Image 1 (cartoon, one colour):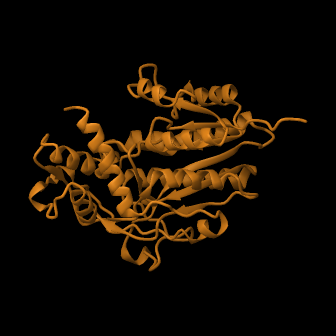
Image 2 (cartoon, rainbow, N blue to C red):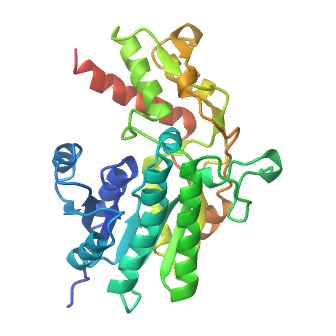
Image 3 (tube, helix red, strand yellow):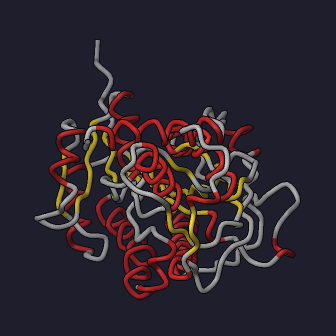
Length: 333
């Protein structure tokens, strides 16, 4: 009896938050996992290899077309997940050109690498799109949240670059018949989130305040509201998109919003502090030239067609992150 062929997946942005969750998820499903890593002396490589010894790393760069073609030849993947990007919104204002090159044009290079190495169109491609492609004025915001048909109005170089990635993915699907989809993911956080992001900055700081390692947190605006879910839930949705009979784009979200103040409240409550105000200072240096007031997603299409639904709620997400950072910071004492 013939054994079932082991599937192969190639992931860009493998050392990021979603890359780790996705590598773990696919490994548990029996995939052979390949990951693209940038540079010979990548500071994240050693730690990544220790945590994910089953991932086959390939040196390549989203701004280097030939290296991506080489990565395709080496991995011969059934599925490609393009998670690589300059993904920090605030940083994109400081380095808009690099953001455009990696987050925008890098999608084109990856699609071209697939097109040139997969003439039979067997490879399935996932593009990590984002809710930051929305975020315009109030008249663009549907009452039930942004869905797949909502109007785009990005408010940052990151959002603009991601919008290019979204449209070039759709263009390759329609022009070349490629199985190429975009997952429009709303904010998803977790214990693997980088400490430069506001959610992890909060939970790490809260843990350090609890342990007496620091006195306060400096943040920017506290009023923006986001649709926050758990990254571990969202990689399941990515995978589900590539298992469909026909390629299509989907929003993944929780369908509810919470402000940064809400996040602070739950995080501080986890360490027994009900009033967080004395511990938080606002610093204009962390405020952006343009901000999105509210990002609320409507995941009804994904829930209906993919059978996907988030499992971790907002409070559970914050508690998970605080608990993780308490464990990490306690080891430093």
